[in-house]
Length: 331
Image 1 (cartoon, rainbow, N blue to C red):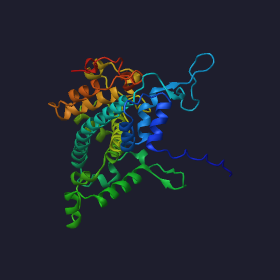
Image 2 (cartoon, rainbow, N blue to C red):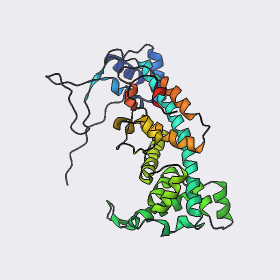
Image 3 (cartoon, rainbow, N blue to C red):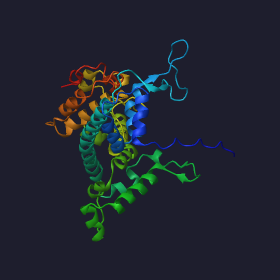
Image 4 (cartoon, rainbow, N blue to C red):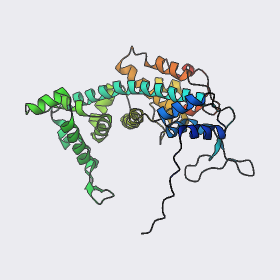
């Protein structure tokens, strides 16, 4: 099958050339030496995700936005909107970094707690329950064919990945069991799991085990918890790989519970596809794990410190307005 040749890559540019290019396209560069230094420290294309919303939107002859047929989003010019300042872009980058670190703080608490609860609620039936298919929903054994033509099923895939994590774990408790040729019980095995393995195991479990785990977390809807864990894992991976998160959206709106906490928040569909909704879910879980936590106050302080850039408003994070975000959170 013939394929069209790839277009050639863009030419290499020096940091000085890149700064001049940004200035030529309308970005305000108060200090060229500092701009060159920041480009060398962070990288042009990593920063480009932060200044992308500041690029002018293409319009047709009728004054309407030109929408990309694939992304369904407005197409952008190379040139920047008025008053786009390189220093503000760096402030936005640093804001995103602080936000990522706070997200990881909450995710760590949730990950460790969920692993512990799973090991307790399923392991009480059998210390080796994690190795056995008796606890897994029958649908997870259905054979499906991957792109290479290999037969696979979800349980076997999970089991293989979990075994790899055990084999390469450097946790003292895992290493001791392997060295002493001791059988590894559930509550030790989970110390080797990452968040993805944890969330997938929860999704594989039969309903009664999911219910027991969900109750421990005060979540009345197991489907909601299943999707939360999946999306939290995606967020965790973005944060761990230093990827921009502040204005990212989820593929599907986050499910919410019909209870006092979420009813008071009254989250819109847009909020549930963006960070506002995710922060609410993380806080719902964190404050059940540690009722005295002040994590939310730290998040509010960080969000309220976001630099003021017209084309990068708080509404891009799912907030209804750009006001002090503390007014939107439930006490």
